Length: 365
Image (cartoon, helix red, strand yellow):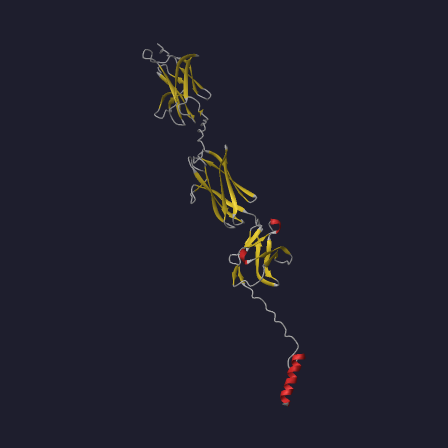
């Protein structure tokens, strides 16, 4: 009876004011840190061209996104903690686009992008902006995409290509080709350069499908703020007429002889011949003779013209130009007296020589 009364008193007291066997101090609340997903950056660029105005990343989410809200990205120089630009990103956006301040290129150097939520970092990516400007190299003409390389385009061609190498280019940068001649623009062509460096070619053809006319052409390739030029020709240059050959014709002194050998050299040269002489030969060895050059020989006796011969030279550059003066069937012997002969070759100074025919002297009785 007493025990039951005591338990009842205690139960009553516990209901009214609590019992000493139960503590009045509350239990502490446990802090649960949310699990972070793993983010990979496949194909993230480690270098950007000088002209770049943004960075595009494609984070690959591995695991579930248990975080509420979005993550924050921050762009800064690699050695600085001062943000150059900030923004938010959600996995539903897929690409993480980092626009540069004011949409302008950044100075060359190293930079860092950090993606975080609260005080926890999800990923960090470091990249470099190159100092080199876009550049084109080795511009060459080609008749097809695989060659051959030529220095000028043949007549009647309908298409040609300009091959070149490039470097320091933003992937996806547009390049423009313009080709003109004296009449104006012949063709234009645009293409996209897919990499920072590589080989490419641009094509040119007339809009009407016609052939390129012969002449001088000028090609301009424009990339970013620079341009490169290539001058070339279509067709062969007109063949100029051959330059006239100049001759410096000159002759040795005239000879006088009674005969000539087979090489037209003088035999029995003299300036006095006997009364019974039937023919006299004059001539000169001449040099640098033009083909078919005219020559003229005049014979004089006692100052009066007695004979004249002319012709065209039919030998080589050097030879003997000669002529002869002979008697007639009725009077076979040359008349006595003082003679002179003059040889004139076109474009040269005339040559003159003299000789005598001695008169017949009857024998003394």
